[in-house]
Image (cartoon, rainbow, N blue to C red; front, side, top):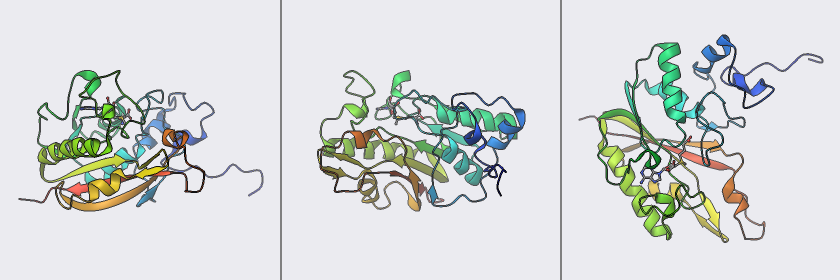
Length: 248
Ligand SMILES: C[S@@+](CC[C@H](N)C(=O)[O-])C[C@H]1O[C@@H](n2cnc3c(N)ncnc32)[C@H](O)[C@@H]1O
């Protein structure tokens, strides 16, 4: 209707905020952050990053909305994110515990806090594990730390290391627990590297495949690294793969 603002999306109250970095000031807005999106499905897109969770300045960070939706669906009591980066998932869990009284126990760690997912034992078991690994070497997370997955020179080695990390996560799930992995395909010097295809080729190793979600990608670093002529479609999506550990 002319002259009327468009209706607000219930799950994205921050979309209308004048300054994207502004913290949510309004209590009602904060409450609405933790409601489930009734339109949630296998294709999601969050063009504006919610400022309440994590740090937009941390390279390769993700918005917390998808993670929140998954927690609202699976209702886990124990959650882990062993590649937590700027702490997006920890912030979401803290907010849910505060506003919804969910009482979720959370384990968050990262190489930058001294935790190496390839070697250090994951405490657990957990009902839900979220993993958002580096996009190969598109963003480097250390100067030259060999434990850092983003320092892996060759694609096959990166795939092996990432798979080993996923196996460790899958092994730290409770029976019936879920593992969510957020990965993006990349194009480098004209070649297409599919992390999703690689992980899906392991048929059952990480649990029973339950969903493949397509998530719109915004502000993609991998696109800026493309050297090929612009014939192939720029990558504007990533995947959230969901695996479930079979019940005993
Ligand atoms: C894509 S970022 C995660 C960003 C995070 N989801 C956020 O919103 O800020 C990937 C993270 O993996 C971490 N990482 C790389 N190698 C690791 C390892 N061996 N063990 C644990 N974390 C690692 C990096 O330090 C980086 O923070």
